[in-house]
Amino acid sequence: MTAFWTEADFDDHELVQLVRDRESGLTAIIALHSTHLGPGAGGTRFWHYPDSKDALRDALRLSRGMSYKNAMAGLPMGGGKAVILAPASGGKTPELLAAFGDAVEALHGRYVTAEDVGIAEADMVAVSRRTNYVSGLPVEGAESAGGDPGPFTAMGIFHGIKAAVRHKLSKDTLTGVRVAVQGTGSVGGGVARLLAQEGARLVLSDINRDRAAALASELDAETAAPDAVMSIACDVFSPNALGAILDDEGIARLDAAIVAGGANNQLARAGHGQLLADRGILYAPDYVINAGGIISVTLEYLARQKGESCDINEVRKRLVQIPGRLEEIWQQSDETGVSPDVVADRMAQKLIGR
Ligand code: NAD
Image 1 (cartoon, rainbow, N blue to C red):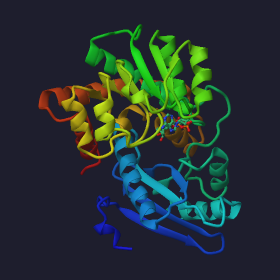
Image 2: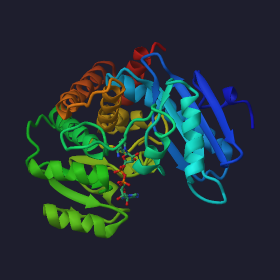
Image 3: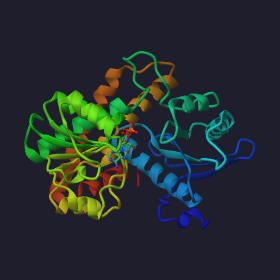
Image 4: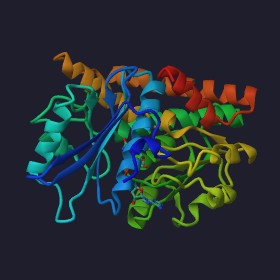
């Protein structure tokens, strides 16, 4: 492997640690991008990487993304991420999760972990037996922050879509606004329900067609095939499934005024934000609009560290600040001609002292 400081995705990360535990078979990378604002916070991914370089790239890119996301959400947290390289021989064992917990503990709170792709709540509970530096643990009662971040992420996106409709279409209501939703899982399904309550006209799409159809019948919405949803004529295209969908071909197909959704890393590469702007499409930077979940789990974590529980109203208060942040980005973009994704990156870099 080449030295990681020559990797294109290395961005002066404060720490990149390779963790190896022969007994449990654990191989993991923990990356701390910035702890300028607080401990590096971000989930753990468990994934089969064909090449260990891909794991390193994920850890570097995702931890930088978390620095930006946490900073723009106004949280006192830096950015970190862990990836566990799934062993060829099998899956997650209690021993492997325990060894990972020990590695997090050894950083003495510089890194705070949580769930990400391939890691369930029960896995985090196992990790939390070895370290307290864990967020996103189950909580008791519906009026507490924390637990499943999906509904909070969806709520933040809903507020963000309303702000985008106001900014781009000068409409204060979603009544009659046509939204194409890609992905109807935890986040997309939540967004669709909130939009439907406000009278939006929905087109739903999911590779799990039964899931999209069931939600469409519940919400009296249309459905679209997964390969057609990006070309639907609509006011808002809301990506809530995969990353990197906004590439040359995807952007050329769009027939929407706004792109606003929760999927992480929507832009295939940096220049694609400008391509959207060139087509007159308003883009809500993904890590700003989808911060609701991290806001919830972080407030829960910070309260738990003090032996308290976090009132859900605290989270709601923070969620309604997402539109203000987006409006600031779009205004700067309108004034300077710099695309919203670049404006957001620059704001985030300033906040983390870069
Ligand atoms: P999920 O697994 O609950 O739902 C994803 C849905 O997308 C599934 O129903 C899946 O079948 C569908 N899907 C996959 N590929 C598709 C395609 N090509 N076309 C249409 N549908 C497709 O996941 P989620 O928690 O809802 O997360 C969705 C996205 O939001 C991911 O990119 C995730 O990284 C991001 N995100 C999630 C959260 C959160 O709190 N869960 C927070 C921030 C960002």
